[in-house]
Length: 190
Picture (cartoon, rainbow, N blue to C red):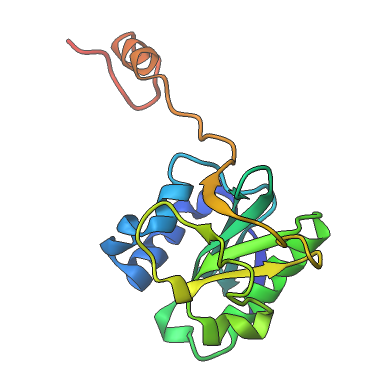
């Protein structure tokens, strides 16, 4: 049975393994990764595809600014297990993600991807001509979808990350707790 659901923290390892299988280590060098790193994905917009209890698909959307003072979302990465890529799961996942995005009141989604694939969901290059990304990318792959007609009219400038920062562990506190034996599974140094 196929289920599309919101991602949980228990999915992180399987999600990362799937992304590695689909994109390899080069995925960390992509320009859009600069917009994601150190940030939290948009609330309610990290989705997984589960097949018989196994994570086989993922998509996440991230808060960005499409030029000054123009909130938008950046979609990606989206991935489906390579063995299942011809079953239409990617399309189902995209439609679910975009439906949830619209229901949450977001007005535009940006992505870098294959125009022939994403055009069927309404993405085009029409509204990205005066926007640019912080690093190398192929201009013809920079696409946008307006969820509110005209929202990106006049959008210009650098796309930048605006989402909440990920909380980082307090390393000195962790070291002190480990030294005092207050972390489960760790014993104090002898």
